[in-house]
Length: 154
Image 1 (cartoon, rainbow, N blue to C red):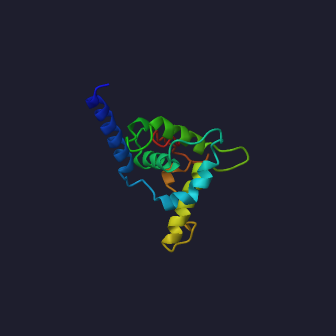
Image 2: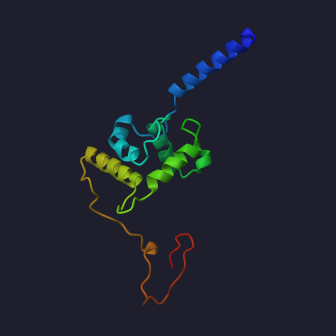
Image 3: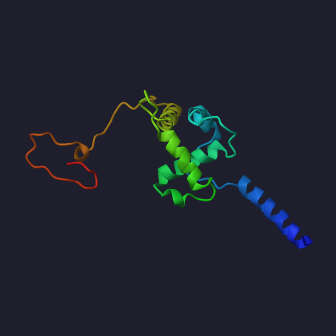
């Protein structure tokens, strides 16, 4: 190989390593300290067949980005692992195991919310709930009944 070609490959690898280190932060990202509290819940879902090559923290932040932004999976920024990887983990984390009421992702998110509420000096569980009257199904005795296609409630 020509010397200039080897130098170009070496420079490209150095640039890739620098790019991986300087990952852009997004508002949906959480701290590693907060992630360490929910990591055992998420790691327990995957079968231990071979070692993981990607950082679970980056995958979780990618899932949080999609949940917060409402973007499609294919629009996941390049700062996160590939969208297919994040989606596969999302699928595993949202499965509800037999005999359980919540998925691993639900448990992790609930734990993060409880921690944030405690940090703000509030009760770990909310004491008030608001119900949107348009989202509650009408009773059988209701005379005027309409259909809201956006909410799929009649």
